[in-house]
Length: 206
Image 1 (cartoon, rainbow, N blue to C red):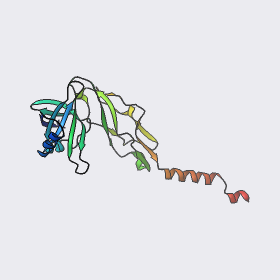
Image 2: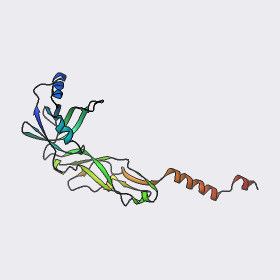
Image 3: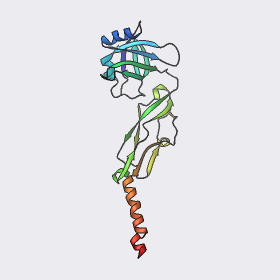
Image 4: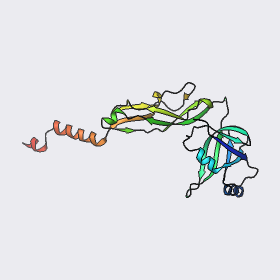
């Protein structure tokens, strides 16, 4: 996937009044900030932004060209109107080339587990993990194949194969996916075991 690029321009004025004027012009007020230095106040085309962010994840690095100067950044936060869904403001977090960064990367589950085909239930309690790497090595998402997962088996964070240069930060004992029998089936099995292994009250009285 090619890098998403947004064309932006610096904003000379700030404040709620100027922000409303920017929105009326079909643009979105935004800010770029990073580890050091002052934040850069900008605005960008609303339609271009809405179309550009479709399909990207929280760990996708986009390029924001501000008056011809490129900034590699995450889309850190997006403020929307609750009723209309209109994007009101965007926060970009700039990353520095050659500097290690920490980011949360979404997990994408793929495959139909063997255990589910045998009557088990799939649970996926974890949706992202934290990693550390250089910006150029940061994956947009981490794909986990669960096809071979049987009943009463699980995949943990420590089982995920990461690309070279990507270091795991999240705890390795966290469960990514597991397959277990349904509670109803377990309860029925336990009830059946009691009935077979223990006499009924009537039999005990006779």
